[in-house]
Image (cartoon, rainbow, N blue to C red; front, side):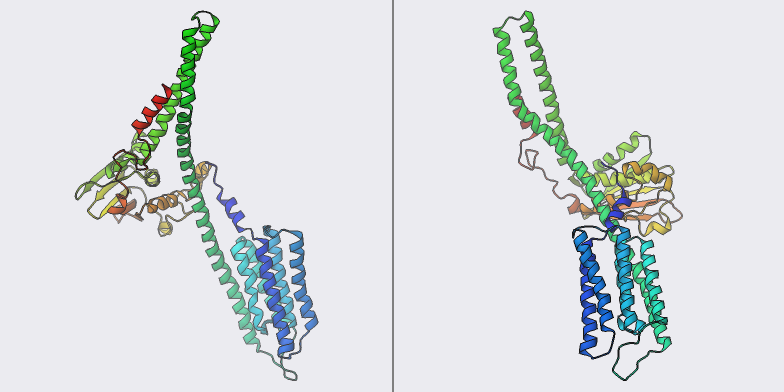
Length: 463
């Protein structure tokens, strides 16, 4: 599996699409033109109409230049996107300067470029654009043309009220910038974590497909290999056994037998993997499967199994095995001396609880554990694991996603004092755990050849 680079993924995801920004600017141009025309011709208010339309035309010219210079699907660099949003702020400030400054009710549109920046650009650039918007609003408090109003009537808002509008723009810029950035960042992290999960699943599926292709190749090569073996055998009877020709025939027969052995191994490998994938296992066997690798390295894992009624059996789900193994690995990494796995069942529920005696989850991450990019590992540990894509806070997220796809509910908590350690509790409704556990009498629910039938078929092809 290729190395996962979350920083590069996040950076690429922030790149703003040119077509999106151009469409938004055309909407702004249309709205500004309609507002200026409505005030001048609809209400009959006096304003510098020519200068206003010259400022509006500047936005239209920028849009036309971008359309000519770049394709619609082009994604803007951070520098260019920041420059274009800064231009929008200054263009709006120029228009407001000509039409009353902050006394103009459209002054709240200063928030729009900041909102776009918060969803598509890094925080430091959003901060810069926010400061530019607040700075422009501050200048408009001090200098601006009169607000267009009825002829012969002056209209001027009290300075205290204008100061209130400036404060609202300041607070709105800060709140909307932080809120929009946080929401967009969480959405990006979730999308990237789901993409990483799909990469893990795609890799496992690819390996399974390779096994199936190997078995299919062995099956298809069986007939021509059997023909070669038959012709070689007939030539051995017809030609003298001594001399160069006899040696070549014996070599050919040896290579045919070697090919038979290789094909048989390929076929068996594919069938074993398929059988393992489709087999049903009890809850205890599932626990033993995930515990065995830890015992192999000498770690003490205590297993407790108990229940009410017959032990549940379910289809072996590679995703569940992977998820449980990941949680167990996490527990053994942080345990002081022992990890306990308790597997229990009742007529209605099946659950597995994994407990360790380590320090448990830190209070600041306890409520977020299991979310993407939330990790308890130190920076040094994350650096060591980065080569395999680990240490990024994706392990528990992937495990949680895979386990919950099977119909289970995963809860991650700390042990109640005075005990210490983390607890992972996985609960299935019993019917969800046992779903699809029945196997057809032939041992293959897909209706294909059984393992014995496939072996017999292959032997017939080779002989």
